[in-house]
Length: 344
Figure 1 (cartoon, rainbow, N blue to C red):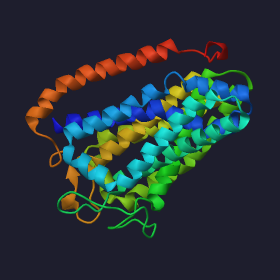
Figure 2 (figure 1 turned 180 degrees about the horizontal axis):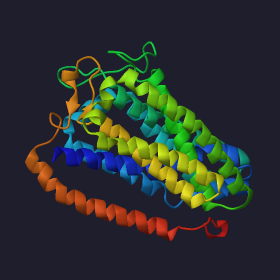
Figure 3 (figure 1 turned 30 degrees about the vertical axis):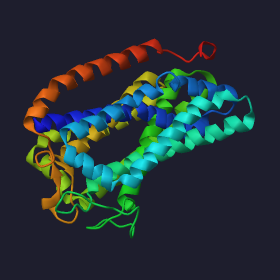
Figure 4 (figure 1 turned 90 degrees about the vertical axis):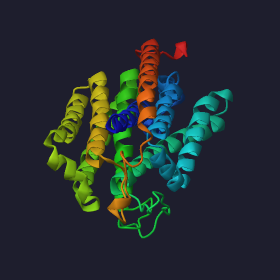
């Protein structure tokens, strides 16, 4: 039962990254591909009807983590207090930018919110990547299952690391590059003309950067967290995740060269899912790994809620998950196709 909820939380987070990730990615490339007001309106119209619905997955994942693994939830939210506040304010800034930009017809007003949208999108992509890097590397948990990490210490990994070190910054940069590629593919799929052509070029350039950054990240993991590959050695079937990750990355670049926009977007979506699946496989059964003493790690067994509650919650989860999938399918179906500015 604990393993099911571990998979469920991972799946909810992965779907959030895929769906809201193209919003973040579009924001990252926004200033480089949208050269005039018409382009900017088209880019924002591409995500306008769906961006806030995509964030429901993050809220649902947080609620699911609280329900299934309350000790890991409390430890993570207290230990990453500063980082979570930063995420909250960045989400607010990004939402305000999308909603308020068109309220005043003045160039300076629009430019201010354009900068806020692009900056918040980039920082969110980096922060979520840094958070993933912290989960892979581990945190200094005490015997009670709690921890505190400074924003940075000496920028090195070790028993007492900071939130930012060379490894977590590398994962943050990799996250930003992948989401920028993902967002550019989405923008190319939703637009036409020169904006689409610039989005295609941006996706190709970001894809080239992703190849380098993913290679660096993969070679760094064994040095930062030697236990990460233990599950792969014990259960080689898990290698399907990293193999699919590499295959989908190469496939995304090949499809991008052929200018099949929907195919490229689908490939980067699968890339994100398989990379997060690789992380979950390598980390299991740990939710929070202790860098100072492995015995202090929070796992699916020592951080879980009671069995009775998990069994009852299973049915509510299935109902909620089906409803959420249905809502997302209807929303994306309603706004499928190319952006038509006259319709927004």
